[in-house]
Image 1 (tube, rainbow, N blue to C red):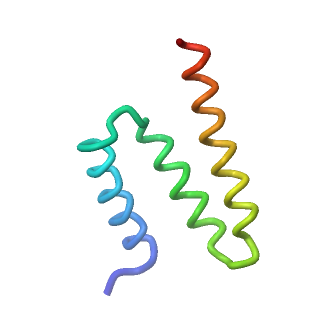
Image 2 (image 1 turned 90 degrees about the vertical axis):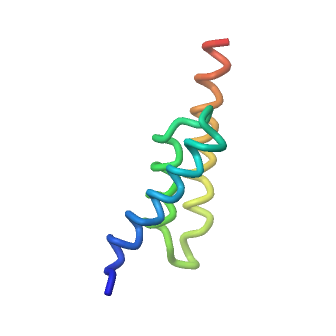
Length: 69
């Protein structure tokens, strides 16, 4: 039986495969950070905190793209 860490690792592998095949412009580190936030804030009471952290990750990434453009 898989423990939670193994399940999370499996999910990350699947997401990485999808990202690489279909969304290669999105850095792997962004997906990894988003998954980590979701794992660390999985209680119902933490949804707003998770949303805010993910929003920050995405906004920071988009700001860097704008700077490089």
